[in-house]
Image (cartoon, rainbow, N blue to C red; front, side):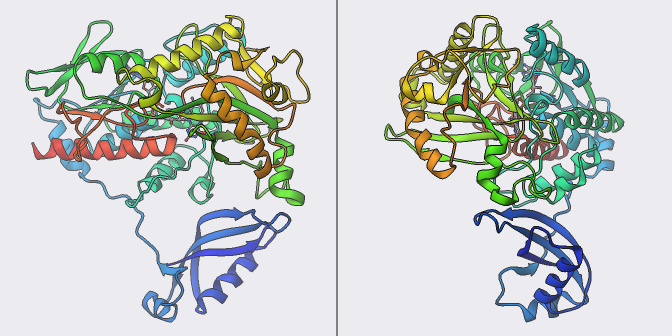
Length: 539
Ligand code: FAD
């Protein structure tokens, strides 16, 4: 198979144009081809090009490659099919022994369910413990919070089957290096579970909220079909260890103890109580940088026009996104994050008395506003040098201030960009209507954000406006506060996946500091499942 990269064609090309372009590039008979990646190059407004990576089957790979030795965009296609580290038959034989202790996965987010799926596919019958509810029940609780402020601290946007990314834009791309093509394994599993096939080749795939819900159920069904199992409302309180710090199992908040020598910790960045429990038990934990700020909303039509010009609205482009970065004079990075085209801002609290923002969208991305986090880097050394968990206190304090400023009833404080830049409270909204549910309170965010955050955002807004005209539009609205951009801690692990001071504990995913999104968390889940499988098989 021959791979062609950087093949550029106009937006409105036909299939025949694509075939002709392939023939022209390879100068040989093409038996078959399939699209590996399709992105776009929008640097020239009005002349947006589609950019393809395509694998072609030709008569003779070697002859073809010999003709194109000077062309770095024509190469042998890499093998991307996933190879299990343990055969299912071997895993099943091991797990049928009476002394077998099933590996435990704590958390059923993307990291936990992919780790569980891989262990199940290898015949190792994992047990997945999830503090929240199964995804359908969790959806009811989450919508009850958004519609009626009925907050459930164990079943919300952060907690429950599917993890933090369930009510999201479902962006499925990552910038992590992935030499083993684990990402392809994740995407093929998602397609098997009901995601659209296009996620396999779009350069920026997304699936939106509702499909994620049914996909998560399908993945559970597959795990169970291989002998794995789930326990919901199973809140892990602490780990159990012997005197040599070898994991012996976990203890739930209801007192139940479950034995296992292999525990994958995939509890996400919001499991603050779990972090405190591990810290108390002496598990090595370090503070790590993260970012805080606000969600900003603009009219999506404005973003589309600025990014795509006359080609805005083209079906192959969809709703436009953006990514902006600025290094502020106070030595802080300011950047846009988790941009949700045509989406809504959501209430993402997991603790009573806190307001936390995030963004989601449906597959269609058809809502009126574009939203993105606009955040400023926080540095543990400078901002909270006390102890590894001080970043959590820093986040929590901000969330509580936002709660109070919003009116102490889960409404979020919002401010127009013009008012923020002028340093005055917003009293009336303009053209952009904030989408945050359960509601908003016009406010002055400067009253609650740290000075370094306010100063850095004030400086970044005009700079972003030069890069993306209209970004500092007077009526654009900022909703506070965005605090859960990534984990404030890292749980260091060895090359073989074990915590550096607790054998059998496999820190994984976003909460342990190894991921920053659905894809990277899912990929880390695969890696830790492999680590556990190898250890189980060699004992
Ligand atoms: P999580 O998804 O946080 O899962 C952790 C799980 O562990 C949870 O289900 C939790 O209930 C459970 N748990 C916690 N503590 C315990 C305990 N003590 N006992 C038992 N269970 C426990 N990323 C993207 O890539 N694209 C997006 O479009 C996107 N949009 C997002 C939108 C929103 C609203 C949010 C909140 C996040 C979004 N993210 C997005 C981020 C993404 O969801 C996370 O990066 C990802 O879910 C991390 O996966 P994880 O499995 O490591 O942790």
